[in-house]
Length: 631
Image (cartoon, rainbow, N blue to C red; front, top):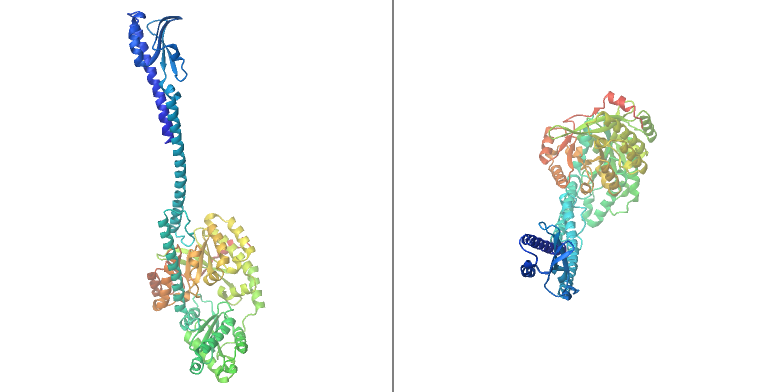
């Protein structure tokens, strides 16, 4: 508006001058024509009549320095009046050589500006402009505040569209429009509440599929499923382990004479005692098998280790509080049965139950090894350390790869697995990795493994490689600094083909400490996968917190899923949690077409297992290449 006002004033002033100049030029042209036939004196009357029209005060005709004619409308004092402003034009005559016309005109614009009326008008205009400027400045500031509020609202809306709903802040006081802002806050609160409710339901579904309702331990179905998966030995490496059956008194019969709360509290103490000693072993599984029988699965453990656990449980009975009608000297009976791949679940459980009956018949707190079990002393910590150190010195464990395929058969990535050779047979990572962690060798072990996989990525430039890595290594600062340096040496395309796989239970246990580590890997372009999903009862909140590429279902959950409604319900619930994110769900341990058909109908994106391809060793050419890249 100010620019328009200035422009109009300037246009008025300029056009007025143009008009005056045009009139003077026309007047001079007419005078030039008239002098061809008349003398200057004869033109005096005509010029006098034209002067008021032109608003001219004086007209003079000169020939060189001699003045031929002079006409004035007013006296000289009029011309000398200060408020008046005049302009003088000297126009040469074209047809009268040496002659020119001098015209003095009143400059109406300048005169008006210098007059009292013009001054008052200008002051009023400037006052209006000043007031309008202040109003416009205030309006501009108000618009800026409103626009910033709209930008904040737009930013929050963009975050909602991008799926970043958990990180959206609350609305500011100046966010605009306020009703739309409050509506978004209310909807976000409802979404968060619905998300939390969904996570609680997902946890309940996990508990329903795997836990005993009274004790909170795993149930019989889950225990049998995990044992059957181990007994099948899909990798054909001779898996083995121990099953312990712990028999306690039937506390239900005491509820008729004792308070139910006392009985439940004593049962809780017994369960807590067993969990304290058993679940400290990696991979151990404690389940309530019958009403008063508890089963313990110890994969890759020896009878000697199981006997040590049984001794600890019997000694721990003395720490329990006294209970009426319960004899602590005849409270716990343990049957131990070793198993190897190829047996059936029924055979293993029957052997354990027979050993438990023998222990109960002997009387007192005791444990018995079942008949027909081989004498397996296992390896001590010294032998394990020697074997692991020798493996590292020889270049690391043997590498195997197992492809994970999409629905239409394309390979999504190749999971790299490790095995060590003890002289007689190959040992799976599930058996020796707990010893690696226990002996404090995880940092060096994972460094060598990552270095070899980085070298392998150059041999397979088109393959995405699944890198198994332990949480203990990622939480060590020296290892993390070393990993940063290794990733900085890789190309961007190479880093995008690294898929770091972490166990779900470990991720949930160290969720706060892992957050900056996973963010760093994501900034490097690496991808992250969580495996063993469904093995433990944990919350699925980590899915929305971390940028995960994949979630892999545990093989025990996939086994016979077409006949297990509770497992199908769990998979559906997990897929619903993953819907707002870019996380895909893969199944591992797929054995039959029936399992795969059920998984695909539920919405699983890909699978991995013997149905598609078995684990295959890395070929000899790659091995020779890897030997040139020491740690």
